[in-house]
Length: 181
View 1 (cartoon, rainbow, N blue to C red):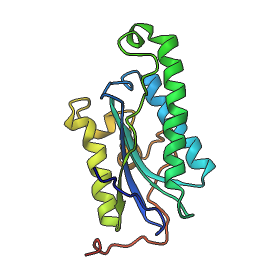
View 2: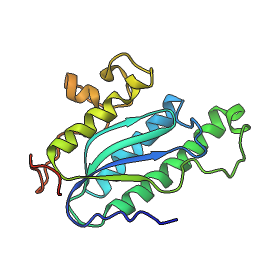
View 3: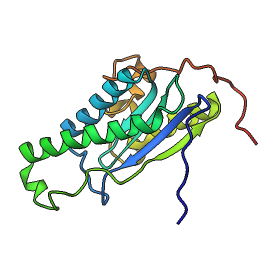
């Protein structure tokens, strides 16, 4: 099976998705989603990254990120998943031991790898932002996108803080042109 190569050397924003292993609902607890967003916030700060938006679902996460330096994405994703995994396992062991008993202790929190979609234009970024903000609504978890507390939708729709610095990306490749042919 061919492995999809992820490139991060042209200064584009990236729409990211990664999922819980097997696919378990390791993010059902609010504290687990707080861990994922806390690590997102701190890893962005460590790598000078920007976030246009995010959503944490019970079994997967979406985010749109951009880095001013090339080749930062792989390290960012490795750290985000690794650091959040350690913290989620500790949290689950301490606060939800009955859930921990439903799988093997050494089972990973996250599926290997992640999905990356390069956002070639501001219009594609806006499309993906809307898609991910509507995810909790489509899943029946919220009536409106801004009702889901684990999303950046409240920032865009109500101007409210969402715990992670988000906003339209200030990057050199910002454009309204279409995707490359």
